[in-house]
Image (cartoon, rainbow over all chains, first blue to last red; front, side, top):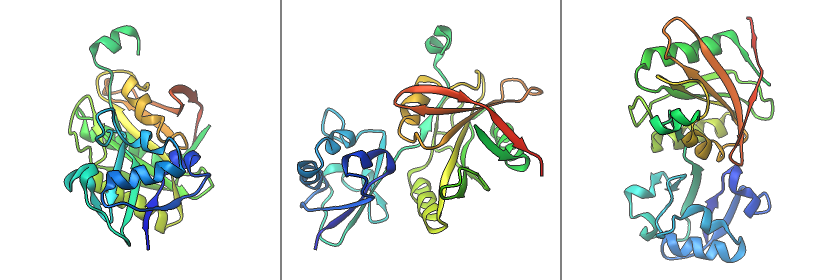
Length: 102
Length: 137
């Protein structure tokens, strides 16, 4: 048994094109370290400098956004499914950007 | 080049006008691998802001589940700018680079009578505008 991790298109360059990979760990943070050992660089795309999840990805444990669980401390176990999706966001330029011609 | 039907084009503009002065956002889905949108999916702007948009995290999860179940791609990701031009901002480029396979459509609602509707590819931080062909039904 293992934890299934679903990888979005943008991060499949780290998984040799695989849509789904497996890993292990007691927490989400452990799981990311385990994945990074085989898919070097992946962890860096998920975490901010301070080790928390970065704002460009949404991570779900089964059906729940892990930001509402425990972030990278969220406990995980065999049979869980972790889904990573790129956040979809954006917006108008702030005033200084607009002046610069955006 | 983005090709889309007139009704989908009109639906995006109507959504942007309706939510003005807040930014509106959503996607057009289409059969996987075709690059042809055929389903209009307006999304809630969780930020409810005139200068920022964000898909709600649970809505995003549901969207991906639906798209997978229907064997579709997200062909277009659209949003509006409500006081500035229909061109990707720095923030748009940061997030847009995460979904390089989608056409990024921007609509500006700054002029009530003038339609500004443009499409871009955003790849690795670089923006390329592309032509749009509206297909009359």
